[in-house]
Amino acid sequence: MYASTQSASVLGIGALLVHIEVTIETALPSFNIVGLPDNSVRESRERVVAALHYCGFDWQPRRITVNLAPADVRKEGSAFDLPIAIGMLQALELIDDVDLSDTVLMGELSFDGHLRPVRGALPVAMMSKSKGKRRIILPERNAGEAAIVRDIDVYGVTTLHDAIHLLSATNTTAPKRIDVDELFRTASEKHKIDMSDVKGQLSVKRALEVAAAGGHNIIMIGPPGAGKTMLAKRLATILPPLSLTEALETTTIHSVAGLLPPGQPMVTQRPFRAPHHTISDAALIGGGVGVVRPGEVTLAHHGVLFLDEVPEFQRNVLEVLRQPLEERSIRIARTKMNVEYPANVMLVCSMNPCPCGNFGSRRDCRCSMQEVQRYMAKISGPLLDRIDIHVHVPAVDIDDLAAAPTGETSSMSRTRVVRARERQHERFARRAHLFKNADMSTKEIAEYCALDTVTGALLQQAMRSLRLSARAYDRIIKVARTIADISGSDAITEDHVREAIQYRSLDRIGLSG
Image (cartoon, rainbow, N blue to C red):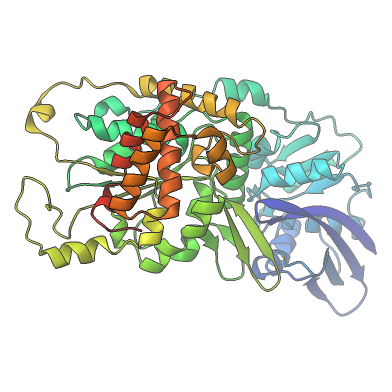
């Protein structure tokens, strides 16, 4: 007896169609799964058998073999439980034999026949549509994210019996529908925090606005209690709203990682990820033993990656950020697979100026100059070179702390940021990745960032005195272009370049380059 069903396996942030073949023979009882299954797939035989018996399906002991094709790609996860169970029931002739060639099944079975949610429902639905499949049946908690994909019928089920009923000829259940445009329009962009919560620090707020307008990486250096973490958390409140395309990309990543909250089918706000300094390099950029998972950099795609107290991170962990910051993507190579994850993030770092944190502040510093230099040198020059904006965060004046908040709100700053990015969108309309002044090529710098004689001489003088690298030279011009966009200027002026140069404070003390 033979039956076949279809399911899918998550691969990177995409999905692979998997054909499941079930054969049942009269021979010594056994249950084998072949086709490069991992341990979680092998264990599905115990879950499937227990669920079928609990739901009232009994059969004489037989030899059962399940094949997952293509057999040369490793399969992982618990989403194969439901298609294996349906295939077994058809092969045992315990349910009607219906054509499932246009149906994709996925779901993890509990012992009592209920279905638990699985990872990657959105990329599976997108892949199913591209393969011409008509419908997808999956756990109810995953139905919302899968229904984001149009032109494919999505059915959410709670139990194995529900899935069997959907496959019967008498089924009249309507597929789940979600109006993506309406969901996106009504999504709340209101944040519980606001930039006006931060008292003082006007120069730092200005630097964060410049970073947000151009997608520039930024590092904040200041004593404990100056508000670095508070400012970083509020950066997301001045970033432009996610576009529909960005929201789908971000939702796909969080779906693969299994991080979508229940009842929230789409990510509608820019991610903010703040990993602890004990994180490993694999957890930061992705990878792992056996099963490859997206890391914190990818989870922050189209959002903010915040590294608080960055000198406390392991040196090897920080160094793996070099390539993602340049290429906006991460390629992970394994013996049997190569995975590419997107990594279009804004890197935001914070650090103290010395081990005790008081160097350059009103408090007495207990550190020697050698200790200060050794502490600052924990961040390599090449990594600092990839951070466009270096800004000092001074201790807040007592008068500012006692006064009522009077600063600009996040919405006021966001208006200027959005306006600057709209100028960049018009400038780079031919490019696939938009809004990134930080991503301009050398040719585009020459085309859009021309300097007059006086401004060019000023930048050359700064290059010589600060002994900056060629990368730092490009980044100063890019930041100056962003400052010009904020001010609504088509040309980069001397004032724009002066402000951009002052954002290389760590270069001025000789710690990068």
